[in-house]
Image (cartoon, rainbow, N blue to C red; front, side):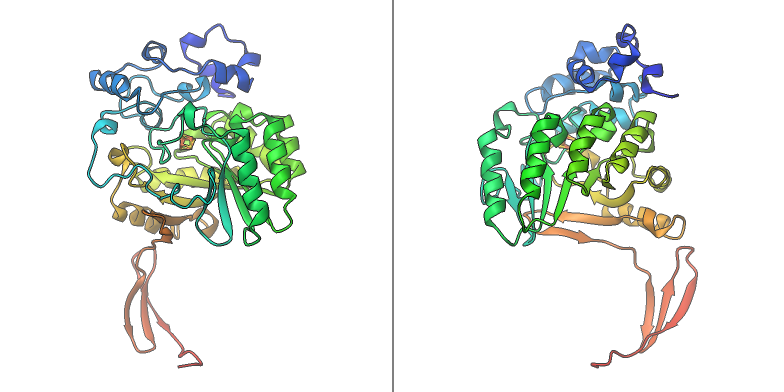
Length: 376
Ligand code: SF4
């Protein structure tokens, strides 16, 4: 398959190849209603009920490109699980939190989260091409009433200008690529013009859900601000379509440094071989697997969560079977704004003084002699 166009659902039969490649066309033709989506999936009764009930909570939107990846007759399809509402969204749990990472509590001004001393999260849009069902920012994303206004973005920029300890700005949302090229280019230039800002990052899922968005014009804006560290969000190897590959290639040509943040999701990628395949494909495309994120304690996404031991099992599998570049950090973002911590499998088996026994990825043990620290 050269393009998802070749496998497009019948509802898009009359679309031309040119239209399919146009991100505005893709945005305008997003599938949003039960009837629209009936053309790409066979709904189960439970899913129908979940769709109706979740309408008020978290909107549904699926680009034609992403809809093409769904196996229509498989209720457990990993792409479908990410794109369509499931009954688990309507099963509230006591421990779930509306704002699991306390992003709002750490906002010195609306639209900027300043938690770690040297970096801020700067929200410039609350819209996305596809509303991922596992989204941790459901409280804002897809809600037009909370969209970042121009005055809010200006206030955020002012905060960054006036806060010299901010060295690193992560432009996020929603998805910042829902803004026009000009608007995004202006924001990038404004942030870059701040003397104390050294690192510019952009968090976007567009290469996955709307890769047509990575146009030559957009890349010109990114190139003007190079290097921009682009964090993508591929969760499954099937998401790396020919269009996604071309999008990543264009970003590389524009001088972007690419990293992927995968969220560990039950029924999507909670299996070591799936993650291995994903990471191999990402490396092939010049995108380094950066994080495996434990799914947060956000409202309505507990059905996606896996035990911590699953992430450790995946890490154990990756180590030794793929180059270190393909082994991301497995992190938990602590609730309440505690920040990220990294979890690693236990490799140290025993220690007797300076004699240490380690286990390798095959389970074989090896003895290592430690040295006393000069200060001991
Ligand atoms: S692209 Fe990101 S912000 Fe948007 S719905 Fe998906 S996870 Fe949430």
